[in-house]
Length: 299
Image (cartoon, rainbow, N blue to C red):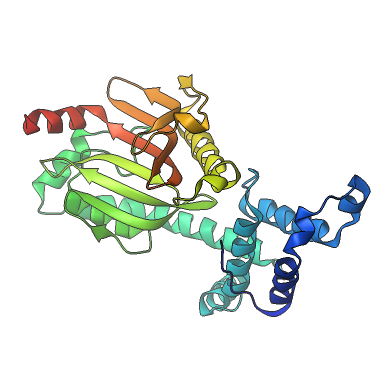
């Protein structure tokens, strides 16, 4: 069950949707369904969600309502006012702009700034006293499997430095891994963990959706897995193998594969799993050489 705090007109709409929940359980003809106010409202919200996020996968209406609520809250925030002021001063300004387009402009503007800062970061690293960081950068050239432009093989400290230059939010240090609770991956945010081997070198990252009960498997969890699969196909090319995964194929704490990519030096997997009756989508991307080195040290 989702508890959603709504404001203004959206609050009244949500109360109407909540108070008439039995309406959706009652049989209705196609004609009634087509003319239903609630169906029209859902369609309009879904259309706005797709246009704003680019996420065309069918998602649960509660997820869409939470997205709409967050967008409405953002328009009342100080950040929104600051971004709008920056936009009006920029050469891109064309007058009135919708919140969705303003957010897209903000993200694009940040990406351009990140590109400029990337050269500065590399210069700073080259002047850094840490020989280990420099050796990791040069000995592990960029690959399509890397996390953004941070290559496998960099030290933990170097990874944190590069990550903080590029991404906002808190990094939680758990020893052999770093965790970011809501890291943005395009239109969606996922729990993301970065793993380091015994030599403290970046060797693997995992992306995981929120754990949900079985009745949300088809409505929310599978679409999240499809989103991850599509994202990595754009990044890595078509999957080498694809699999059909039924409900009873999903095993506790195991990854039931939907897609996989395997090369001598790298691997990537997307699938479904369950833990304590909570189902989730997951992607695992690894530098297989660094993982093998880690395993051999454990023996």
